[in-house]
Amino acid sequence: MLSSIKVFAPATVANVACGFDVLGFALHHPGDEVIMKLADHKQVIIKEITGDDGKLSLQAEKNTVSVTVQQYLNFFGLAQGVEIWLHKKMPLGSGLGSSAASAVAGLVAINELLGRLKPTADLLPWAMEGERVACGSAHADNVAPSLLGGMVLVRSYSPLAVCKIPVPAELVAVVVNPHLELSTAVSRGVLPKEIKLSTAVKQWGNVGGLVAGFCTSNFDLISQSLQDHVAEPLRACLIPHFQAVKQAALDSGALGSSISGAGPSIFALCRGEESAQKVAKAMSKVFENEQIGCNVYVSAINQEGAKIIG
Amino acid sequence: MLSSIKVFAPATVANVACGFDVLGFALHHPGDEVIMKLADHKQVIIKEITGDDGKLSLQAEKNTVSVTVQQYLNFFGLAQGVEIWLHKKMPLGSGLGSSAASAVAGLVAINELLGRLKPTADLLPWAMEGERVACGSAHADNVAPSLLGGMVLVRSYSPLAVCKIPVPAELVAVVVNPHLELSTAVSRGVLPKEIKLSTAVKQWGNVGGLVAGFCTSNFDLISQSLQDHVAEPLRACLIPHFQAVKQAALDSGALGSSISGAGPSIFALCRGEESAQKVAKAMSKVFENEQIGCNVYVSAINQEGAKIIG
Image (cartoon, rainbow over all chains, first blue to last red; front, side):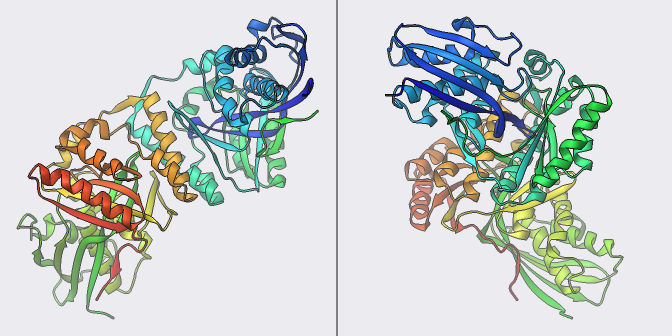
């Protein structure tokens, strides 16, 4: 049996325009790395966290990765000690599924170290619990693509049911993460409890179009369907220069653009790497012109998800 | 140029479970037949209507088919006289798109008689206007599949955008039309103006799943996604024995079952003809046991739509 392992779990884009709460996809980079060692003691201990600017707690009961690993061990009644090194190689609180990536990396690591007690797909409910610890609600549209890779539809939360949606190989994502603070609580707070039926119909018309576009490699349909009538209109004002960045993406050839997760990151989907590089430049230039620093990521859809890298 | 023509336009199932207002499909039968002749006079005249038990008006300004044809002629500034024979070979007010079929048959007939002034797909806006005359609102999820055939997604109403969703060839529909009265106005009246965001998320999760299931011939996914959390819970009580009929469909192997259009017809989707025949028997037996007569239709998805038959 292995006594030490290194796992990568990718960043993810959730709330893919019309697919609020139900569609998310994985990037090849950035992401989290977790190194985990089985220990002689009986505790789950975080030895080190890097890349978080000291924002995350080293206390096991307060960190997503350790809480998730502990729940996994508890489920099997195992008093196994574990030591964890968490390397955040992605921005925190950015709308890129940072806590999801940590939870997923930890779960894949412990499951592998203990000889795969569960198939990878069955780790999803624990990963969702990790999300609950981190942000108060157990959403699946970040953890599912981080774990499984691909464009993932969370068809149902109760019972939990997810499926991978085929996407054309040419599909490339651009994500721009501006160095701005936006709390998930604030971003969730602007959403209403009820929406107009007519608005809901618009949204699920586009969900149908987007999924059909993905499945049939119809880029026009993908482009036309990448619209959010529910969350984006209310959240756009929380992200300075959002409209200008989105417009820059569309003007430079993006299929569509919207808020990544709860923001402040902004994503665009493009046809091909060349188009994506052009779109990435145009989007980041808007923030640069406003003296706002940003990270820019260009990545095809990561079909692999979390993986063992050492 | 032709001076006389006979056109068939098929019945349709709209509001396909989660696809409220956005998904509809065409049947091979039943449907409407329109015979149309160019005349020397300048009026649009209905010569005869059969199969309607005298319920439809012979006055040109009050009938869907003649109003639609008149609008088409007005658009082109043509003072062309037309004589129409309308043979209703399907139940009226049944949730099977009766007025949509009439409007579509009339439009295809006049367009063909005048040498195809428009491609078939471009007739859709006029057909929707015919729907407005018949039921007060211009929905497209009956007229679009009746005109174009297939499983049609109305992705957007403004601007109007429809697309055909590929479905597995094995998919067979059962429609049971009980001899009960249910006005579209009553059926529309029970719908709220607003719905919970959480309910809307459930609905578009299933729309995504249903479309993905159709596109990838995943019958399990189709079955799991054939759920309506919005209209069916409120309309079910308007159709006596709805729950029993639906349960009979599911118990005998249907992938799913819900209300066809605004009701009172009930549809089921099945895998294969044999399964569909079994489901049809089980569904109709429930109504028969309650001394309620019904028509039963079993049909694969009609990919052709309206067609010239003479």
